[in-house]
Length: 531
Picture (spheres, rainbow, N blue to C red):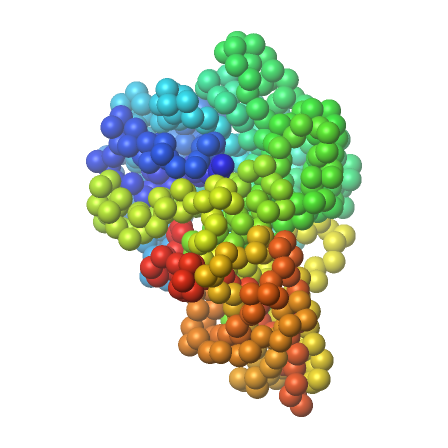
């Protein structure tokens, strides 16, 4: 089954004023009731809190509800599209602040109501705390920032001129920072009747001054232990177990190198679930076996996180779309389940309300139907069977200071040479499903590369077509048909041979599986799974 993380702004920003009432809150959370989402994880904060906190500033502190988006409170928010063709950044921020304030004025706590409503249906709800969020720190006048962060630049990892982004994260080795963050966790745990509480260490995953990460291992273990103690106390009060989860970097060595001593947390039974995650971009090659070995005999569950965006290969002209598609989510989930995760965790896959659509109109839209269908199919191998899916070569987006950042793509392939890739693809496709290898190439010096050869596990795959454009890549895509007998369960090897006299650069490599009957994709256009 699935976990799904809802961030602290999305509902307030993307849903209309007409839904900011008890009925709107209920309707929003009810959309997950008849899906495979067994754990809905509600994030309450970035730097500020979207609930009425006494431990930190609320998102509406300083806001004038009688004024419009041009009031001084929003002066630091650009009055322009958030991305090309996207919604206005200031209008989205205004909606977040105003709607959170409006619910508070009505005496409605959305988190308490969502938790209670799901429990009446026998469904579990967690709260998630972002441990070091630095959205928009390059703009210190933005209203998203908390007073504590603004008033204490000395509590940050580095001065802005050294690192203007992750350097502006708090340094947890500073006692005042440690206590400030713990006080908010304490408040959340005491206020709500939770099924689980998550420490989201991936927003953002840097907690100590550069070079001090090893010293920080004990600090973060102390923090996790303190939260575990709070949860144990709360468990006795509410008379039911409350689990503790952590979202950490996708690879165990990266997590350890950044200060997250997950082996100790598991051995000491401080945590119940580890969510192995990228920072922002979907990582198809999750090292599940290494995580399972590390967690063996501890009783700790492993969740594989499927993010909602793709990262273009560095320096490549193959500009991938930021948004994943259902076929990409299916591919990642299939590989994760096949490798042995205990849960697939959807991050940033929130309901994608097209502007102007909400409620029943959204549910009836192509986007709404695609979203709900995705939540009914990626929660098990059984429901994924027979559906089209894509498995794409990607790379990690988070590294510890001493790790070598060796990009998987682009890959230079000299004249007469081959480039080899291993890709987790899950079970063998069913009879009636086709398999394709898809890739994009460039000449090493730029321009269109000549045709090359592709093999799957040593079997030559004939070139069959060239797609003018595939969602996820802006360049024409070369397509090769893979014989069904060549496909192996679990992991497959793709070899690309450059038979030309010039060096080429590989910029995109994937294995795609059709739906039943060989359709691409299995259901309709490849609608983006989330914004």
